[in-house]
Amino acid sequence: MFTASVRRLAGEIIPFVCFTVAVLASLVVARYAALPYWHSMQSYSEGAAYYRELSSDKNRFQAVKAGLVEKGEILASKYRRIAPPQSGGQSSDLSGLLQLLIQRAEDASIRLDKIQPIEDAKRSEKGEFGVVLEMKTSYQALGRFLASVEEMPRLVTVERLALTAGKNGLDTRVLVTCHLRKGE
Image (cartoon, rainbow, N blue to C red):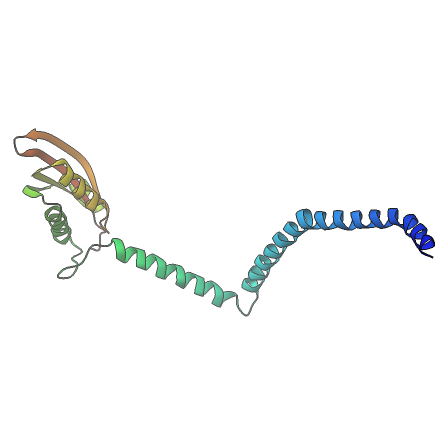
């Protein structure tokens, strides 16, 4: 009774094993070849849908405007972090800029011995004003001062730096050029 069934199963075992191996091989191929491609295609289609929505007539300007406003807020927050604290209002002339330089020197524990503006008609026409700062300081304090000058919101460049070793630290001369716009 069972011998006929066993003979029939023995004849069908080879096709059954071949079918099982083919199914397993197709699952492996799907797992390692097709699925990663499918996921990348999904991300591309999501990106395409995003850009399609941006380019549609009804949402294009609102979405672009919202993106620009968001970027503007990020830039404003970064500027507020690096801008110096304003005390007594911000002066936009040369004297206000010199006051900021003096404040930065005091913050770096530097004693300014002399502040001497340089008269140059060609530079003043372009809105550039040179100032020589003479001070006695240490290397660390000078580094803090120069770093704080670089972070100032207006364009201030250090053109020359002369160092002389003294008994109480460095005798330093710094030529600073302050760039102001004509209307300021």
